Structures are given as C-alpha cells and as structure tokens.
Length: 334
Ligand SMILES: N[C@@H](CCC[C@H](N)C(=O)O)C(=O)O
Image (cartoon, rainbow, N blue to C red; front, side, top):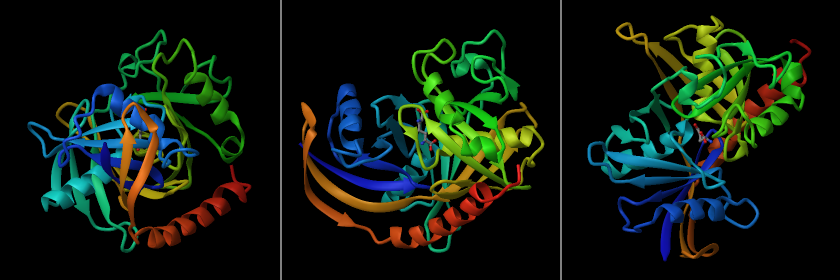
C-alpha cells in the first residue's frame, strides 16, 4: 500500500505524522505498531521517536494516537500534539481546535512565535494526576512528591506524576546531569522491575534561575530524546509546587533540541492543575512511501519533498545549545 506522511518535530522530538482522516488506510491495531517499529528505526527506517496517527473524531476536530518507536502506544505526547495541532489547524483553516487523545480532549491554539519565524502552537496538558495507581507505580503509599525511593537511589529525590502519561522527575545539580545516573535509573525502571509495570518517562531537571529550567528525558518506549513535551510540562508543575517557579508565570524550559514555554494554571474550583505547553511545530519533509503491510521494514520511498523551515530552526537551536553548554557543561556552579 502507499502511505503519505509528514516528518515533523517539536523541540527536536521527531515524528512521522500519518493522516488517517484524509486517507482511508484502514490500519489494524497491529499495523500501527508494526509501522512504528519499522519506520522509526534510525538505521533501517526513516528514523523518528514515534508515529502520530491523525484520525477522525466523533466529537472533536481530530483524534491523535501516538506510538513510540518500540511500537508501544502512549496516552499523550506534548511535542507531538503541537505537530498534529498545526497539521489539523492548517487542514481545517482554523487557529484553534480540540483534539481527542486517549484520555482527554485537549485544546490546541496557534500562538505567537517563541522563536522568530518558527510556527508555534500552545497545547493543553491535562489531566494531572498524582495518585500512584494512575501511572501506575507500585509503592506502599498514595503519592510520591520529592522523596527518596531507596531502590532507585540513596541520594536523589523523585516525584511521580501522570499527565496523563507517566513521569518520574528528579531535580538535580550539574554534577548529576553530567553523570550517568539518569541512564541507569531509567533503564532499570523501563526493564523488568517491581515499581513500574508499564515503564515510565524519567526526567532530570536542573533549575537555571527563576523562570528557567533545563529538562532532559529518557522516554519510555524510545530512550533519550531531544525533548519530551509532557515531561517539560510536568517538571514545570513540580517546580511550581516546590516553589522554585510560580504558578501562572511563563517558565522557559530548555532541552537538547531547543526551548519551550510552560505555564501552570490551578483551578480554584477543584484544585486541579492544567499546564500549557508552547513551542515550535516544524515540518521537515512530506513523503509518499510504498509499504508491504506484512513486512513494513521493506518499504520504498516514492516521493519526497523537503520543507525549508528547518534551516531557520537550526540557527535558533544552535544558540540554545551554546547557552546550555556554557550553563551546564562549562559552569562550576551547582
Ligand atoms: N515525546 C512525548 C511523549 C511520548 C510518549 C512517551 N514516550 C510515553 O510512552 O509516555 C511528549 O512530547 O510528551
């Protein structure tokens, strides 16, 4: 079969976007999983952190399903939702839409650029759940907020939160960022283990001054990515709860692929939190591929059209990289 796709990214977290609204592919569940494994492979495939499937929704403007590069499905993807949001907004000629995701209908709005000339979108990250059963995390307590868990580390404190995909977050210093600890903890909780039966996204967060964070994430189903939108949103929320940052105030969140803004809002009515994630949605190329559904790793590229947006993005992300290298790797401050 022939499949049309768009390669896109949010903060360098890259995806293949496949439109099932405009095209009648009639994929089965196994097909989406197999396509993710085959096409996301960075050696033999097209290379991406995941596939974003855009489907028809019965009550919202569109529905998004997200598959990680290992074929597992995630309930949410913040960087991916900005890309899907842009794609659907442009297809429908709208600047604001509602996208159905696995657990919630989420608002996406076109917004002013945070980098000059780079299309930016704001996406709602919700619901926010601290109940450990929602991740799920198996620990003999209801919540985990900035606490040690002996089996993970004898010196780092962790917070567990679902937004609604699962995140384990630790606020650390520069020495810890430079060390190998995140990798070993992330590999442990994403392998066979008694705490996280479904795995978890693991983020190490370094505050860089008021209103600024650096977040690095090892994603469940992928490994280290340039950025994880839900992780940056969850980390901003935790920073506000730890009184490092303020609710309602814009926080600049730096990552290995660029920078986003996050704003945390609390509802007075039910004490719930919603986070708004604002950042780029950049297109790299569109392509038509021919795939043998039984062996999707044997695909051929029929047509490929490059967009010219990435050149501008590269200039801006290089500036962020330089800033981070100075702040984190060449700084002696803790
Ligand atoms: N990159 C995403 C999150 C993708 C899903 C994640 N790996 C999971 O399994 O929960 C983001 O930008 O939020």
